[in-house]
Amino acid sequence: MNSKDAFRFVAQTKPSLLYITGKTCTGKTTFARWLAELHGYQVVVLDDIVRQAVVTPLGLQAQEPEVYVSVYRTTERPEWIDRFVTEVRKQIAAYFEHQQPVLIEGALANTDTIQRIFAGHPTAQVLYFHPVATDSRYIQNLTERFKESSADDPNGLPLGFWEHIARNDFDQFYRDRIVTDTLQNSIAAYAQESAEASSERLALFRQHLSNIQVVEI
Image 1 (cartoon, rainbow, N blue to C red):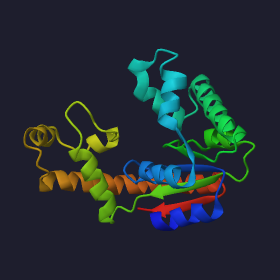
Image 2 (image 1 turned 30 degrees about the vertical axis):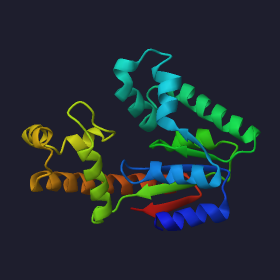
Image 3 (image 1 turned 90 degrees about the vertical axis):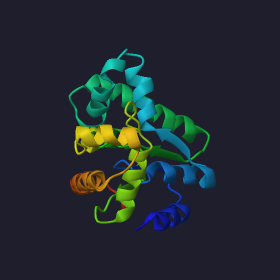
């Protein structure tokens, strides 16, 4: 399905707990905002939870990138994951107490952690935003995010993206703000790599989670 199909699906099925996930620049945040505005979903932003429940109280600001990787992808720091899961479930319970539907938005990839969050909510619905590398929309989204970045602010683009940008191209762009053919090729190369990684993650989700709908971008 595409994003319009996904919007109709949510409007028709009205899941009380919805998890929207996928790669950066696939439109997750915009979609979540539409649902919040039009269908009254209360949005739980996982990046905010990591910061509020793990990074800030434990004084891990200098290790923030490591914290996100550990909480979202691995099981190596169970104490961090425990704090994260507890806070997410606490927020879900608070909204449910007032009979408000909940939308979780983020890039949590560890299926064990997702299952812990979903425990007791067998009808929780997953919308997986999956990039199609050959689709110019995804490449365009990445390019627009890149154009809004700065030398000091990656604007939410992941490390894997920047590994495709040569240093001299990086420096030149922040001098003249021109997206050259070389830069566009680098962005397209990342898009292909990202789409392949997304396919692998989706296969894992389908193996361990139920109630998944795929939104192709």
